[in-house]
Image (cartoon, rainbow, N blue to C red; front, side, top):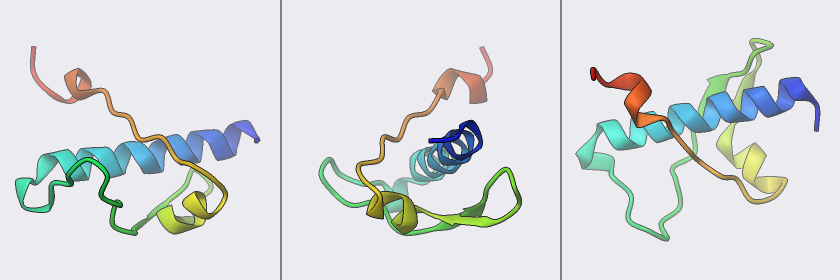
Length: 70
């Protein structure tokens, strides 16, 4: 996997985690599938979650402390 693709995947998945955690109305339970969405990658082209998951498992992570005052 290229560095650009890895960075794009990380950005997309981080955005999903932030959006998911920011809204209690759309909170997912353990084991539920994330809703499909698309965001622009580092090259400006849209990247869909469904395209990434079609290639294999996807890990979603976030740095909560980075977005909150300390």
